[in-house]
Length: 507
Ligand code: AMP
Ligand code: MG
Image (cartoon, rainbow, N blue to C red; front, side, top):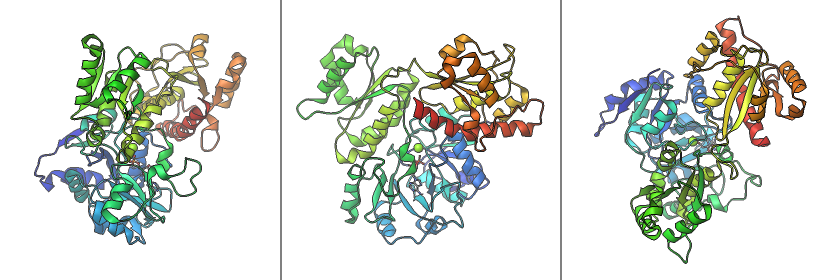
């Protein structure tokens, strides 16, 4: 599929959005800018389109999507029994980066959007976003347009990094003004709670409306919460491949001094620095030419400026990722209005475990018989998720070396925009076993045979049947119709979330 980039010209001509608007209405996917980050849009009314979003992002099915609307009157299409406080908050913050959790209108919004009695609703202020939603004429679900776990996109080029060739349209209107996702408010609870910190803080809500809401940092630790939460907050997010080290300013010294000390402590060969340009200049003067030359900076205009830092954070993380840096030293903020920024930065910092170096990816090996149908599909689907710290390979118990992936396996992967043409089959051997952390076999029988060959590794060999919905093997589709290959692909895909859960538990 060729991805068409639609450039936005201002002032906006509403007709410019007729084509992507119709595409959305008909169930296609359109990525578009909002004031927070770029969203991956689909019609909220079409379960198939909604499921495509989950699949493209590799998003866990229990992490619900936000429904985006163009005008306040449309709220009834998404929610019922609207609490009066919605109107107060709407007048103060919408259109804008605030999301309201209300009771879901189950007549219109399908379970695929949100498997809860509630629904999250937002009214973006970005003009192109509004024009597009109006042109579509339907409510639009739009999670951030990135592979789950990667830093969110704040430019059209970021969207293309993850989805070029996989979606029909990207609307390009430059960089996003805010730079982090919306603040999610549970407006059904009393007092209202912030379920996800964002640009709008509890302090801003109090200032503008007089309403006291429970801020993000006032809430008990995870696990002790006895009220509804934003299901997405339990996932690692926003993680670049590099290690992230947060440099918190200290009361009694300048920020450039703190940066210099932290750099000294970590002794990284080519460290990346994210801070304001004034801090950066002071730091280079302090370190002197030769040392400063070893640093890779990404700076925003000014000094210790939370708005500028928020605007640039995700672009900085992605830029450093492209440059394959080993570690990123990023400026921290302790001010209350930095809750959203610090939440994203801390998640980025824990995305890669401390002891894990970027060169030591863990390896998962999928095993079947010939290594031409099932295991290459599993390998490709796993790698397509771009799981932080992991890579997948595959092999066969009785494989000829060097065979291509079977044509029908290649075809069902192509249907999902995944290319496995470079695959070559290989038999399992000692070296592969040594470099592999976990082997996942397509059937229980494969598991038993391999465990007999490598009794010491018995605990590192599991059968895919423990991850499938029905608890059954992934049977060989070889020689069967395209439909059987599709079903193989879909059953492997269905089990992937459980498999990832297992990886989180084990490692
Ligand atoms: P994203 O689409 O990536 O910006 O994420 C949306 C966020 O909103 C996630 O943290 C979700 O868990 C949260 N969310 C969506 N719907 C609901 C809901 N009905 N109740 C609570 N949180 C929600
Ligand atoms: Mg997201």
